[in-house]
Length: 415
Ligand SMILES: Cc1ncc(COP(=O)(O)O)c(C=O)c1O
Figure 1 (cartoon, protein in one colour):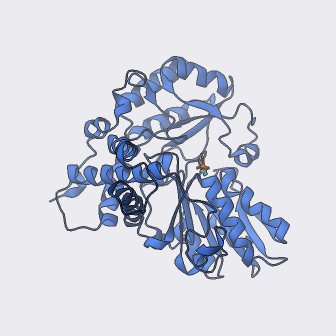
Figure 2 (tube, rainbow, N blue to C red; figure 1 turned 90 degrees about the vertical axis):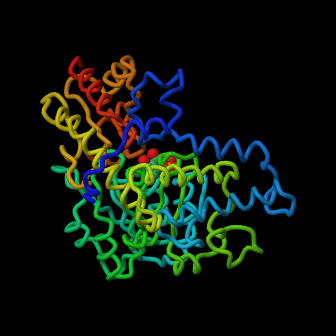
Figure 3 (cartoon, protein in one colour; figure 1 turned 180 degrees about the vertical axis):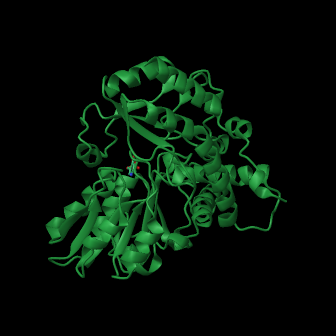
């Protein structure tokens, strides 16, 4: 069977997200997914179920508590299956900013005076500031700057920055402004030749397809679950061989109990359990499109990722093309998605009117978006963009439809 011909069933997808039926949100075209996504019914159901009968202290022997604990463990375990990690390699925390901060604090242990840390100017600040702060521990900070002509982080440039003193490299898998997918696998290969620890920020990547962390061979990888159809939590993956050597930042008696030792406290229980709903949604998505049952979850995710990329490419390329062609608009990043080389996160400014004004017009026309620097202020600063006014960002995901694309272009034509 030619599986390649299978296309994402957008009606099925949208039917899984109650926001598309809710009186408050149903008439809006949602283009702010890089800020935070809608959640499928499965997630809401899991949250409600937990809160109804099992919102007690988990892990005791009475059934409400026992089930609460079992579901909390299950949520983490299912996520390890989706991203190809081991059970003790995943930590769920409050946000990516928190996760990266506690991680940088733990990695301090490996930093000696004069060691070098490479950060980029394309990343969200969450994957820059915690590493820059290690200056206080004696580290020298080196900046990998993106090319101002094409807005890309070039590996040839990175090669020139790596020295025998480089210890850590913090880089985004996909910028929340530029949208290009950085070749993290290649970057890790290069860095590992010099035993450099690579921290990948997958926040803008994961909503468009969960990563296979072992295939990337990245040392630490993080993404925000509230942008991958879940509640306001974030996931941090770390290779076991590094995690086990990190200091305990939690209660003293937890010594050796990695990954719980990384974070001073645990995640919100009800939100953690609702992550089971993300797994269920993706599994249902798989079975809605494919029948084959003898695949691992990583293999199923890989097939769904392809469906999602094809769909996202179809709905976002007309917008990229439209903005690119307009002489009064300045598009950041690639003007076309091809073979998943870019996420459908589209940022632009106008040479004539402010980003704020454009965003107001879009909102008036029931297109949910905003103007901002989206905390990628070093990226915007390098591009000479006003940090207050920022860019207009249109960020799509697999539940955006072709109708929404057409509506958006019609509104842009009026501006
Ligand atoms: C690329 C990227 N990295 C990191 C973050 C920070 O994530 P959090 O809000 O979970 O701290 C964001 C948030 O928008 C982001 O877009």
